[in-house]
Length: 221
Ligand code: GRF
Image 1 (cartoon, rainbow, N blue to C red):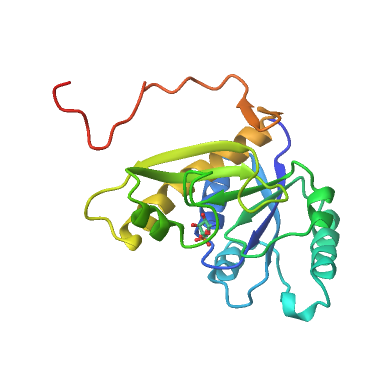
Image 2: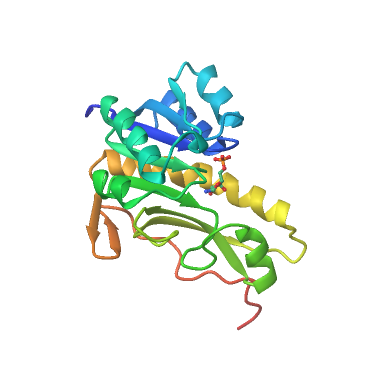
């Protein structure tokens, strides 16, 4: 087996996606190693999760830095000194500067709890419910200069149910996030990701087994 992919995971909150990455590494389904976890929020529960698994954690409060660039330089320094190959944003609530993006070009990925390009930004489950979409989901994508605009690696589609609330929908989406994020990282670790402009192709991936999804299901047509 190839050497494990070296990850730097950036968090700001609960860290449930970090947890799913840790769990997949520990059970051997993800060939990666988390070299460093960095939080910009000292109260993030993800810090506790990381420490429980003996992972090195750094906490940088952005208010301690003069500028966004200074903050990003500190991130870059620590990711590089840990020989990080892929930067994984896992609920990291901070826009990165072009300095950071240039340094890790096509080596930063993010997870977003909607079917991009629908509903970028925040409060996305609320946006999806208010809009009345019949499907939503989650997306793993490369990070570029925009907000949630980079090339898409993998998406998971979920039906929106009539009795869904923001909370029930968010919980179902999160469960799927925990499946597709480790999968996207494993595609990367396997060198299977080909980026062609906006289109990302996964070498030798199976074709989806369904022709279309319907919500509500079709009845007799
Ligand atoms: C997830 O919903 C993710 O899609 C979004 O922020 C949330 C982070 O959750 N970017 P967690 O900290 O991984 O539990």
